[in-house]
Length: 197
Image (cartoon, rainbow, N blue to C red; front, top):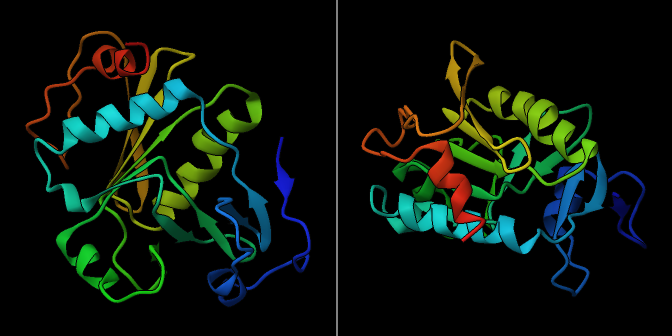
């Protein structure tokens, strides 16, 4: 269930969102101008994202990998910001964040090269990850978007081609064919097992 943050304007601008601080450690996404509290993840989803981060760090500098602390400004009817489960930046993207007040990738910055979402149970979460975020991340030109779905026991690799995503669904032991991490030999079954071990 989505909860709107209390005591804030009904619709916020991007500038209001970037300056907003309620004095707590509550995480929010901005969805069409509305400040929406992001619920905590399940222990299994958190563990899966952490272990995937450690695996990616074998191929990519750890400073380029962000776990649940990177905000991405995306397009929508109104101001919109997403907080992916895992984000990988390019060297150029990392350099543009130097000296910034927040860990937010704005529209004028290079997009991440990889975003990963672990689907939580429920149709609202499924719609958000498979439909809305997929469209938003494609519009930002994010080279790869991985949707890890523990409930369906599959992983979807969305590859950005000419302005839109082309999807490949992985199940079982077939290794992922990532353009961002070409040496990665992990299969969907191995990645999904991270959340179960």
